[in-house]
Amino acid sequence: MVFNYYLPIVLFTYPLPIYLILMAKKIQDIYLFEGMDSDFITKLIDNSRTERIPAGQAIIEQGESSDNYAYVIEEGSAKVDINGQEINTLEEGDVFGEIALITHEPRTATVTTLTEVKVLKINKKLLQDVLNTLPNGERLKSMIRDRITMNLQKVNHISM
Image (cartoon, rainbow, N blue to C red; front, side, top):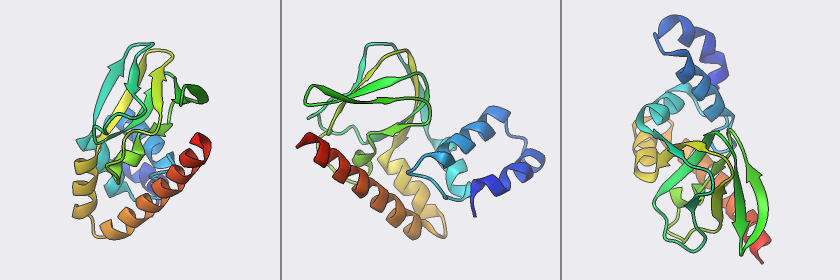
């Protein structure tokens, strides 16, 4: 089931702050977590942390070892560079660094904030732990792995 179907129930059943409900909706709309059930999204948010990063700061740098985090932009914007060439701008709801969730490969791009950015940091171990506690965790792992693999293929195509 998709989180959208649970939203009215959550509003009346759980005394969650409205910002958590809105964040859950945003997370569920991200390509990586699209279609994931409400248990997964709730556990992911409960166990992740947010961080504010000032404008002009690199969050991740191409070639660096992974810090085992993926990031979701909650507020602000950032640019993505591969081999010094700007290839994309990231805004609210965009995810980056997700390749670190399944590989130990060095970072494939540099992401630098254009404005102050608020990010949700998703730890690789946390994601795996959350997936391991859910009854359909193996299926979700496979879906996430497939999505990340597709994204990695796109990145490799751009950097060539």
